[in-house]
Image (tube, rainbow, N blue to C red; front, side, top):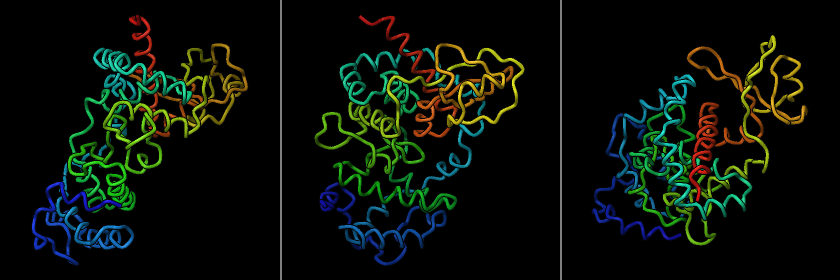
Length: 335
């Protein structure tokens, strides 16, 4: 591995006397982070990778604890919002117009990626639109700071974020990225597509299938979103979701996102499908809280696949509806 190149990034110009070797390895956030865990991580990472303890220590000494990240983790927006409120965030004229512009600016890439993967263009555009407003809002936190804060200052999920921090340190070496400049979400997700380091390693693709995978670039992000969905069993040509507009004395059923029952089963229980889908088509019952009551949808396999990207049904529905709206507008102005 080429860890020595990291020393050119600036922070390694400090004298090694700044490093408290074998002791607490972070001076920032002292009292908020678990200093013992920080030191253990540094030693463990150094032992298992081609990087000296001094180098790991300097990296962690340049990470900053961010209290606001902890506050946001304690109160995620999707856990407190109704569908009515959540939808208004994403279904705006500005976001739809920006989606059309993004699609037109990247139409060759989107078309080629869609053809290769089988994922429809609008869903690729919809995910990037929900995640980062088509790359305009990739996050304000350094990824290094976010993962450091959550790995050592958020005990509830310390194991997960410690693993993500390790993957991030390996990833920036593998893909020739600058760990001190990359910014992302408060959870450490990065790029147009907001991949966590583990997802980045597993599913990111270079659009031209050569060189580094840089999700801070639109073409690689487009290829990576499609690859993520394909790897999670997106079915080409299948529907995503369908509104249930006809209820006939419906039985109270357990909602969910995984398609475990057939349309015939739902029909027998008062949830009547429309269109020409086979009665044997598997679907999930999606309940969404509107301002004046509950809204019901059928979610199919591809809806469930979108929830593998983000497990929230609100997220998946926002992606689907934004995708449909952008496609309608794109088709109407397409030359």
